[in-house]
Image (tube, rainbow, N blue to C red; front, side, top):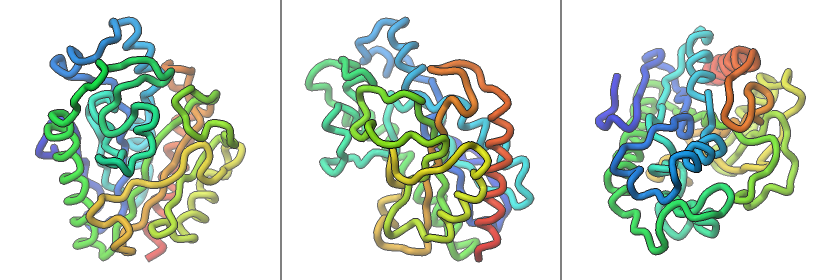
Length: 267
């Protein structure tokens, strides 16, 4: 089932499943008119996409959906985060504005120019960010209506070695980082994730990346919406920085399926 914009896709799961696997950063696609506003040449842009893309995370989510007995829903961004980053705050609350990576990026992972100085990203926010946010909000509302609760599980990856854009890159970099929120991440959800991903060499919490994605309508307001971010260190399953996936992908898919099934049984 396609969303109302070609920039994202909502893939159905079990009708009464509360789980949405959210995959915001897996694509490398950039529309031609958006590409025209990026100052990097083609080779440099490909290198940046290697670093910034959470490669193969859509495949991990698909493997989990196929393996889970109680299939989750999947909300998958079809465009690169270099178009817009749907997980940023769209205003001054966003700490990544400090390195030019708000809802619309102006700097690269190496803190070099991505777009011209004083670039106005409001048109990209209107065309891409706002429809994405509205559709994700509607998807969460639909799970609340169908299941009485919603569980958003973000599927991300991160590089083995820190990149210059990282604001908190000096902390631990475990194979699996679990991002949490004090309101929306109950202890039993975090415990279920630790159990599901115990076989990859260790899990950590909120380092090097912290937080979760919750639609602003529900954020801090509706405790029926729970959320957890899964950040997978890329050497667990792929060649870095932007290479092929290895056998770890299938194992991660099964681990994520285990988390989906555990969440379904939490009630």
